[in-house]
Length: 337
Ligand SMILES: NC(=O)c1ccc[n+]([C@@H]2O[C@H](COP(=O)([O-])OP(=O)(O)OC[C@H]3O[C@@H](n4cnc5c(N)ncnc54)[C@H](OP(=O)(O)O)[C@@H]3O)[C@@H](O)[C@H]2O)c1
Image (cartoon, rainbow, N blue to C red; front, side, top):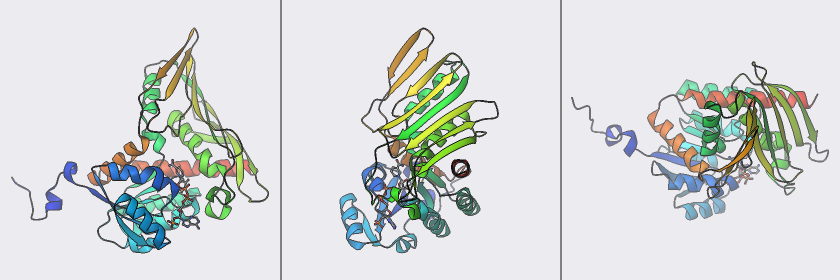
């Protein structure tokens, strides 16, 4: 039986449909990584970018070949946009992700989805109620180097995983950076620490909880400049996490098992041209494997577009983001004690 209708959009298969995307805010990360990945993806059409200022919207729209919109609300009101990418400062995510969901758009939200577990829970509930996809942009989850680590763990290369260390830190940022502004959701925990928490969930699983933490605040700005946390899961596996804006660059993750360990030293930010190095240590040898390069923003965008177009299980990404925000709350309350 032919189920085709007069509406060409309904007749198209997922393979030949495109997701019409708008961008809410012309952030550095959008211009540098995400918009180029959106433009390059054949299942996405970049319709428009919005900025608080007309000049900025026009400059970015010219560069990426789309329309410019002044103000975020007019972009959300457009019927020709199915999904939006929200790369605003963290404290503005709840408002604009919430408004985007209200407007019926699927949302790719920059990390962190929200500045608290309560905010994240509200957004996840709103997405679920309206059957929309809400995904938090942890691009590193979409890099093949973590698939390689998972495959090694699953084949028993390091025995039973016992402990994880994850670190993400870098030198001080300019004073006017959004990360130095408490009102915008600044601080090392929300910016860098969140990666280490996400790595703990990835490798220790959903039962991981925070057992202790330390946060060091800048007395001038009030934001946390650095911190560390101890985590553990129900099986007694542990993790040590460290992050900061006050140190040399480090972006590493080690899984230490009963018979060996695996280390990635560009665990969260591998650029597309990098062939990442994986170190597999066992009792009697060190093996260094150079892995294929991967474009984590391209694979993230492809996954977002495919999930939104297929309309399948839209629940899991939001659930992960809510659990992640609850872990952030736990680090904050333990670290500020
Ligand atoms: N996934 C990743 O790898 C990654 C990497 C870096 C950053 N991020 C995340 O992306 C988000 C943006 O970070 P970014 O470094 O790209 O920041 P950014 O360059 O400072 O951009 C933030 C944008 O938010 C808009 N905005 C609205 N109200 C603002 C206000 N009061 N102050 C400043 N900006 C305001 C601005 O867009 P308009 O002026 O155009 O309106 C601005 O361009 C953060 O959530 C961050 O954690 C993710």
